Each structure stands twice: as structure tokens, then as C-alpha cells.
Length: 277
Image (cartoon, rainbow, N blue to C red):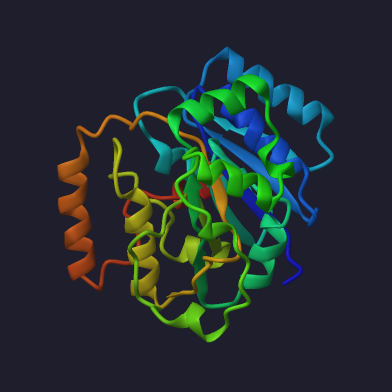
């Protein structure tokens, strides 16, 4: 797959983490990608950081922002996709750090008719604070370095860092939607548009990424496992407001049961029409 990859990085008012995320993307071995920061209403510090990166970056980078009206990650991701120029979308969070082979391995995994969820390992609270304070470039570190962090209890596991050339195993659960999260998820733009992107009815924290994956599966797009190939290092943060959790979960269960539910009523198409006009 030689197409341009559009990396959609979702962020909200955490410029220190976003800086670590973007620095790791600047260090990718595969350079055929663009970055679109999907900003869910951050303030001046984040906007200045992104402006500085745009001015110095060798990788095309754009900033899509809307006003802070609570957690609207699906909405800002839809707006970012509408602005994207690639044929292949790679979603990640602005508090995740990719290793240098991240784009390369996702490109290798890309296959028509499939979406690819990668996985992650988590840093603990104290170590996250140290990494950001000391500006430790996690993306430059060796496996031995992470082994030491694991032995000291600073990260929760090591297995995601292993690269295993697994072939048949990656196709084992074509209709499994669990644990496919937009902190590390790749999908063809054509498939994303076919289901009308994220459903903006999912406001507040919870399940908008699972809903997207379920509708992709209803559309006939299959899961191809990205574990042991393209992990991210996820910085520790407090959980978002989960007041909408139960309502979103009930909506999700309805989606699982109703295989005719494919297109979001309120999705990406509204921004595509704006762009075309």
C-alpha cells in the first residue's frame, strides 16, 4: 500500500503530552503521511504548540479546532477526516507515543476490506509525570530500556512491544469489535465514509469508537489484528467525565443487535458537503 496515510491525532488541553506524541511522529521511518490534529477545544497553550510544530515540521501538519462544549471527540475527528487528503486513516490520541516503525508497520498491515486495531501499553501516573517533566524521548528507547521500566513497575506490560510476523492469526476474529479503540485504529477512508464516520449522537465519554467499529463490521469490513506489530505507549491520565456512560452503552448494545444499522445519522458527511461547497 503506497497511498498517503492521514494520521488523525485527537487532543484536548494537554500540550506536554501532545508534544511527545508529535515528536514521535516526526521521527517515523516511513515519511509518506500527514498529521491532522483534531482539537476538541483546547486553549492558547495547545494552539501555540501546534503552530510551532506546523512552522518547523517536515511532515504536512494541520490543526482542526472547535469550541469546547464538553467531550465531542467523535465530532472533531469527523471534521479532521473531512480535511484529510489520504486514502487511509490512522487514528491515535494526543497522549500516545509511537515507536519509529509505527507508520511503516500499519502500512504493511493495510489491506482492502479490513480495519486494523493496534494495541498499547500504559505508563503509570508517576512515570508519566517524570517522562513529561524530563522530556524523555520514549520513541528513541530500546527494548532493554522498556524491560527495565517494566521490572520497576512503571509500565504495565512488555508484550505489545514485540514484533511478530503473524499471518493467519491476524484474521482469526473478523467480527470482533471489542478493544478496538481510536487511540490506535486504522481504516480505509472509503470504508469510514461508507458508514458516515463517527456518530455524533455519542456525546460525552464512551463507546463512540466501538460504535464506529460495529457499523464497519455491519458494512462488511473485517477486523485484522494489529497486535504485535504497531503498539503505542499510552501516557497516564485521569478518566474523562463518564456521566453519559450508561446512555452511550445502551445505544451501543442496540447497534450490536441491529445489523442493519450502518450509517450514522449525524456523521462526517455534513462536513464533506461544507468542504465541497
